[in-house]
Length: 256
Ligand SMILES: NC(=O)c1ccc[n+]([C@@H]2O[C@H](COP(=O)([O-])OP(=O)(O)OC[C@H]3O[C@@H](n4cnc5c(N)ncnc54)[C@H](O)[C@@H]3O)[C@@H](O)[C@H]2O)c1
Image 1 (cartoon, rainbow, N blue to C red):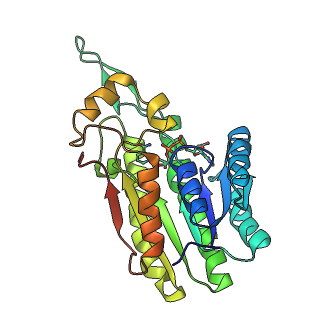
Image 2 (cartoon, rainbow, N blue to C red):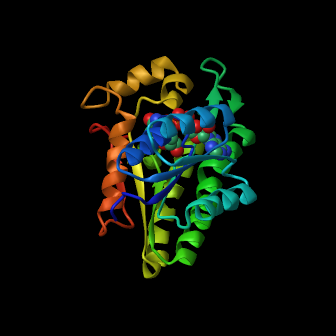
C-alpha cells in the first residue's frame, strides 16, 4: 500500500513511538488521526503536524473504553471518508515482581496487586482488542482493505518484573496473527511489531535507572533504539503487501 493520501489512525499518538510514527507517515503524505488520553500533549502533537502542512486531527480517548474506541475509528471515516491504516500503539507499564520476599525472614512482603495487573491488561490488551476491532469494522465497511499494526514488545517472551506487561504483549502478538487469518478475505492485513528498548518517555521516565543500565549491557548495539527506527519498520509493513500475520522485531540484537 502506498502511504501517500492514506488515512492513518494512531493510538497513543501524542508522544513517544506513536508520535514518531505520526511524523514519519506525515512526511510520506498520510492524513492522520491521533488518539490519546492526554489532551494537552495531544493538542501539541496535532499542532506540530499541522504546522508542517499535514492534515491531522486529535481525538481525546481512552482505548480501553468501548465507546471511545468506536468513536475514534468512526471519526477517521467521518472526517476523511476512509480508514487505511490503524497503529494500535497506546500502552502503559506498571512493573513489579510477582512476589517480593524478604531476604532474611523469607517471608512474602509484597505481591503484584490486582490493580497493577488490571490497568495494564485494560490498556495494552483490551485497548488493542477494542480499537483493532473497531478499525477493522470501518475498513471492511469502506471496502478498501487496510493494515492493522499492533504494538507488541520483546517482553512478549516473558521478562523479569513484567508479569502484567509481558502477558499483554504476548496476547497482542497472538491477536495480530488471528486477525491476519480472519480478515485477509477483506483485504485487511495485520502485523505486530516487537521493539526492544526504545528511548521514549515510557523508558526514560518510567523505568528505574539501574534496571535500564543493566538492560543496555544486554543490547549488542549498546544503545536504546530511536522511535524513528520503529516508525521505519511500520512504513515497510504498510508498503509491503505480502506482510501479514507475523511479528517483526526491532531490538538492536537484544533477546530476553
Ligand atoms: N519504549 C519502548 O522501549 C518500548 C518497547 C517495546 C514496546 N513499546 C510499546 O510501544 C508503545 C508506545 O510506547 P512509548 O514508549 O512510546 O510510550 P509513551 O508512554 O511514551 O507513549 C504512550 C502513549 O499512550 C498514551 N496512552 C496511555 N494510556 C492510554 C489510554 N488508555 N488511551 C489512550 N492513550 C493512552 C499515553 O498518553 C502516551 O501518549 C506501547 O504500547 C509500548 O508498550 C515500547
